[in-house]
Image 1 (tube, rainbow, N blue to C red):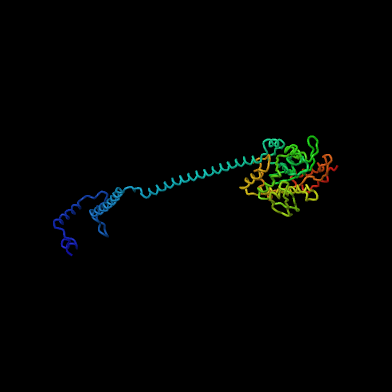
Image 2 (cartoon, rainbow, N blue to C red):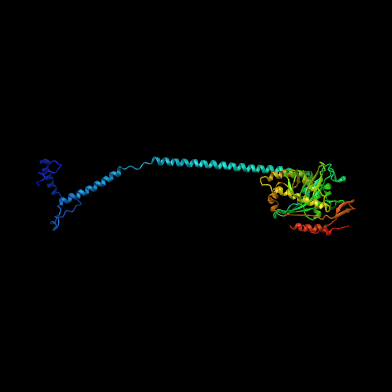
Length: 439
């Protein structure tokens, strides 16, 4: 193949002659240049064996070329780095942060509104409950009051309750119906008031126990002036305080509360409760003294209305023996039925029920006492123990009392009953008639 000048590379034009001459001169000049800085040029003879050593000028050119390439690369990198700008904050990130902040603010405002609403509801409920409680207390206290004068007189005859201890309540069923004809004696009829029903109740709220002891109305009682009368006459002599005094002396216990129900209102109480359930032991028939209507009850367990309940509490002539004892047993059964009916009411209905019944009851007890007892015995008869007994009832006509039929005096029998009652025991079955003092 010929020389480069004669055989130019395919696709390229041959250089002009004057340009080729100039290139030769430049190459010769570079051969005479000193070694470049940082490049070692060997000065000894050429290496033996192997490839011939590079010329100093060739090594310098190669090294220079590599250095230039590296410097170019670094320069390019520095240029790229210098030309790069810090990343600008993303538009979408800013928008998301704003939305999140707004959401938090809305949630905070919502929680505040909800909290204020809940607080308002709670306050309304509290004030409503407190307002109703005050109204209920005022209404109940007014309904239970016997009048300021009698309230004070009764309170002075009572003994305060020891905190947490059982206490005694005297319950009287008085009869003062004008023109009722309930007695053939002028002093015991018409407007004169007698306590035909006298029940001494021991209340043990801690143990949910109630003991009812009937004081027979024919029990002898000696007044302060020495007169011998029936104990139910004490109410006509000195009202409730005298009755409290008489029963306390007879039984030997202190009485802490008092309540009275008029027989004329017993019918209203039972009707307000929608009737009460009792067990009628024999067929009873009684002529209502006010209406003249004859009411008859057949034997068996049944729900009585108000008029029937009044017959059940009054009837005694149908019993051949122990007439008053049977009547007192029926009265205690009726009292327990009324109590169970009230206490079995749902809690939310009990205040209204108590308020309806309270209008027919007079007592020294107030709202706090009634509510406390209602809560203690709110399970009804299924959650409490009830004992019931009648005091000594055997007797005969007494000449000293003007021929009145009176029970025999029996202090030992009363002591036997009350010792069991006061200890929380069941007094039923105690033989009290054997200790009666028979003239």
